[in-house]
Picture 1 (cartoon, rainbow, N blue to C red):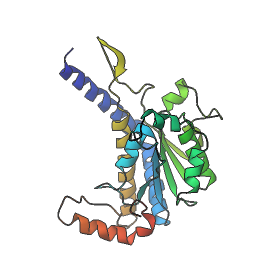
Picture 2: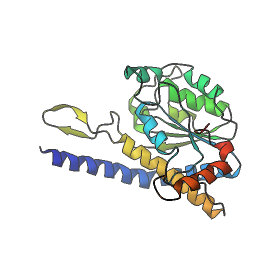
Picture 3: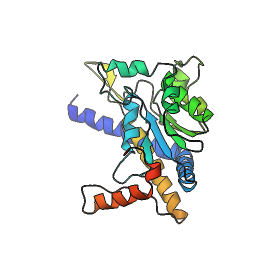
Length: 251
């Protein structure tokens, strides 16, 4: 089997998942965008969290050209990426009880803010407790996860619950357990994960929906421009000055 054939198969698998996410999650994407818009109108703030590779879609909507300036990354030291050594430490931190509460208690979140929690499996303590504690603090929680994991795996949280059980709204990424779309002769393990592609698309769809909802209400949404086009830095400076009290990644 040639590499080009495998590449085509991966694109086909990813496109199929994207189409399912678009069609089957349309109502929830619309509701999530409206929730973000409502929060912006009410003067609230927007936060997004993901651990490990689930942090990639979170980072993708923060301080992003073409993105909503008010999206803030809620970072957990050592768990936001694979920049810790050893890399396995990040995975271990996802299973630590109490870490989410400590992070939230020292963060700028306030009741009425929105917190998007991204976790592919939704089974580890960190995302489960992030959602649980967020709601206890009065946050509106949106979970982006694969519901198939909750059906086919066991929770690692002491409560036996998953991320999906502690959210005001859940968006299903449709990713099958294992996050590997391909198999091939001579390759013992399944390979080619698509969760980042699909989850990033879901997040961008939610942000686009929020921008459209704000515009429909007569509000010019605070979007960022690319710093690599003429006038981009000046534009972004004005947006950040106007909404500086709700933008935390520059403090």
